Image 1 (cartoon, rainbow over the protein chains, first blue to last red):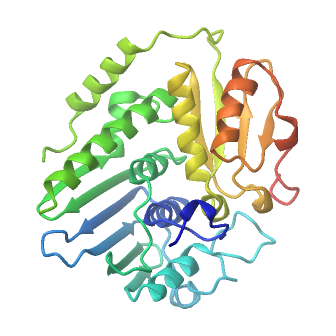
Image 2 (image 1 turned 90 degrees about the vertical axis):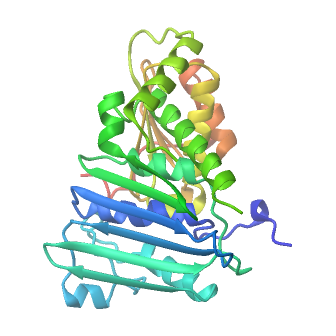
Length: 198
Length: 129
């Protein structure tokens, strides 16, 4: 059996990790609005997991888009001398590993949309991981932006928006705010998995 | 299920506040910056982030801000966390697994002691401006 804690792999382990990484890509592209949807079809019993991440950031031209799967390509200007960008390459690998599909579309100056889906029951599919902390991580990323996270399972769903959290807490990076938000998402997630599964 | 409402969040926060006896941190803010690049996430930065929140919660610390940054050029030492605490030098810690995150809160932030074998003094040279 796969013992997660014994793995020393330097690749993302859980779905939550991918969501943080890819959402961060959107925010680093200068987006003012990022929409993340995580939809699990628990109702029809096939356990399909679908994730949509779309933003209105810098976008990519055709040349950059064609190279986005290349682990030695990065669009980021953060590290001038570095030529590595593993986020999307990791995604492509994980989707190939569990027989899912993914796609990315982008337009320079307009934004980028990314989609992936896989069978959650596939033995090679990654575990969900700690979703509450992943969403809180995304919410707490630096910058001024709106992030709308929607999570659905079967007929049940909940949505968390960053603007609402900022309105309530003021500084979202205050540890107390992060802890409370995490608690809220945990509670929503618990309710969702209990109600949404039958 | 009902959508997240302001009232829900506010109530949660108020309940929380009642439960917390504020600890004296001289009214100064402590900042923890967790490296959350691809390298950080792959190495378990999210676990460290979670452990920081858990321990801050457990020790009822107030005036702590937890932020995130991308790759600090210390991919070999991920997960990394920069800690800016009053009365302490600014330190970048490396290999911050959950247990080290816990120690950072207890030793660095509360007791003002460095965790010497995890100290990296600053981000890599090509990242520094």
